[in-house]
Image (cartoon, rainbow, N blue to C red; front, side, top):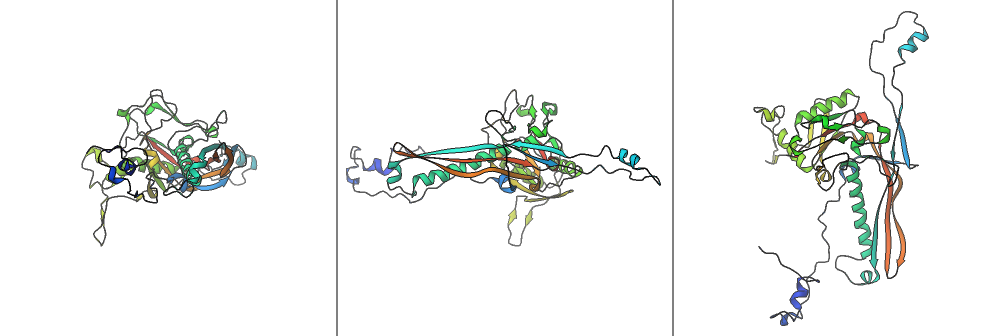
Length: 367
């Protein structure tokens, strides 16, 4: 069906115009415009909403991590000397100091005096409406930097915090067809994300349950225990489909079977898998629409390629905190001619209390 083309003011404005043949009798018709505005865009921030809140007191926010020594033979001889025992403990791990730069996020609002004065459907105050809208957009931008952009931490020029991928160099499951393309972060204190020499579509792989199982084991062996699996919408569907496979009769489904659909007492068929019971604990499977966006590309690529559906996170929210240096606030900049102007500002960073407690799967195709 061909679409309609409406003039400014909506379809009724065009219909009332006497310059249009046959519309002279429509001059007195009232507009039927609902007194609300429907916003279709999603405003959730799944990762940011899942983690804790803390306080930053400097531009470069720092914290310390520690771990126990690896279990070993602890037997000692009768009457062992202090020096001998101390020497045997010399290889124990020491506290590590990590840090991430605070990033300033901001949006501006400009509304004319006339726009605030006229009676508008669905909007009591245009300035207040725009402030709320820009604030939601800013939180979505924050989520994007945290999970989707492979963003590095930098203190020069425009400061940026290192996102999730900048803190994972121990627990990595690379499912690319050419794994050597990826170089993991080497200095977590600087928050530098891993880099790619080359990524092409043919290298990317469908998510498998075995990927999750193997990474859960790696995290467990490092001392952590992941409780959430965060996926793009496309990978979320792949995961449910793999989990619902009746068996492992084909090579493609190897390791993905033996999970059955659940039909409850009311006859409701549950296709999705919300809790996955792995060998190393239960995982809540969470979709994140930002991870399915295709607008951005990860840093460090030589040939480019969209980050859409590329990654999956296995993590425990207790290891993550959003550390706020300046909470979100409106700055009223006053009048500019016949317009009122304002700005929304927030400053903070991602604190990863112990990077060994979380993991990353990448190289996924989303299909």
